[in-house]
Length: 284
Image (cartoon, rainbow, N blue to C red; front, side, top):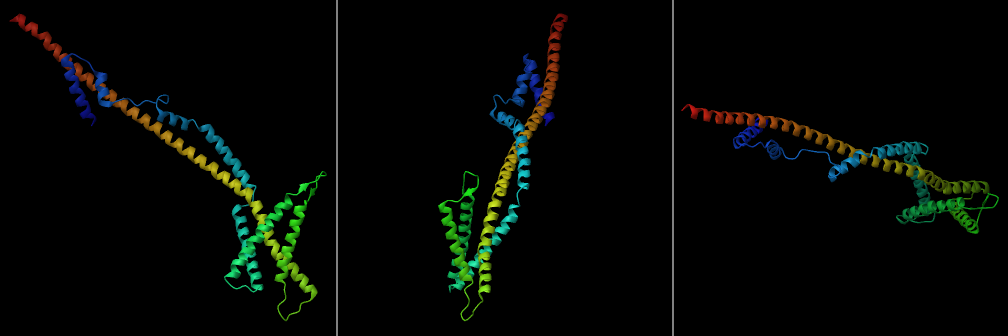
């Protein structure tokens, strides 16, 4: 391919030499086109590549944020482990709700649906009570002071829990239980009612910061990958441009040499014939 191109350039040079013109640069431009140049000022594509390559400071800042995010995430309990505990507490609460509905004489599927609804309500009610208790107004001495609303809410929650426990400890027909045994069973039923709910609320509250930290870390890593991909693409563009320029310059050098050699040979031959013509006339 190169030899064919040089041959064609040489033929053009011979024609130009016979006409007495030298069009080296024009012939090469017509054959090779415009030389690849790096011009981020006038070329929008080059400007975008330069911007991607210049984002190193932003990339380093994001990498620092990534390290801080990893450190922050390490200070929190594992969100996945807490999620397993949260699901377990919810399942236990749902099972307890189904047992309560069975004690009330409900049949499936109503028993299961109402039991799950009771479990969801218990979890939500417990979380609401815990949030209200944590948000109590502080007094002038710095100690928390409960509002009337929080006291009423706590009383309602207590009645709710006692009602659930009473249903669970209701003795079967024809059975008599001792007062101590009934009291102990009531305490256990209260514990099985509120402890899974408070466990779920505790897990959810302590899992939330870890989830936020993990989400922030994922977003940071996503931005890092996007910047790295843009920088990689920009670097490849610059390398390809440099390679094209090198190939162009090589073809330009070879084409110039082929043109000049053919032009000089043809010019010399033409000038030699022109010089010989008067001498032959004089001799004759």
